[in-house]
Amino acid sequence: MVFRRLIGNALIFLGAVQILNFYSPRPIPTFGISAFIFGALFVGTGLYLRGRKEDSASGFAKRLFGRREEPRIRKGAADPLLAVRVLRLASENGGALTVSLAAMELDVPLDDAEAALDECASKGSAYIEIDPASGIANYRFPEFLKGDS
Image (cartoon, rainbow, N blue to C red; front, side, top):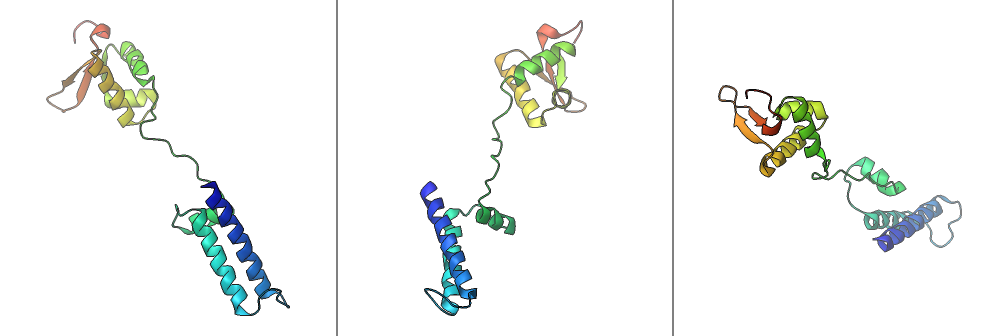
């Protein structure tokens, strides 16, 4: 990949020199419109070799000036201690949690909160009760339940 990028940069440079040669009053190695055409071909090939990730005009500028994209956060890159934070929250709330309450209190997305609660349920720390009236899943943590459930 580094080799392609290096060759791409070299071709862009050569293309720019050819285009400048087209506009010079006395062309050096080539003359006329061929300098401009070869320059455009070199620049296009260089951009192609540098990478084809972006399709927009901003992507073109990024490739032209060599700006790299910020790494995206992977979908599974949640906090590894989120289940522990859920347990702490369950002890503070009397042993009962919902997905939305956990997400709000822990400032995490709903999917991450649900995954952490499901992890607690799969490990046996909690069980799930579905409220028949609303259909909302309530996660109960027996060791933190206060009085009646």
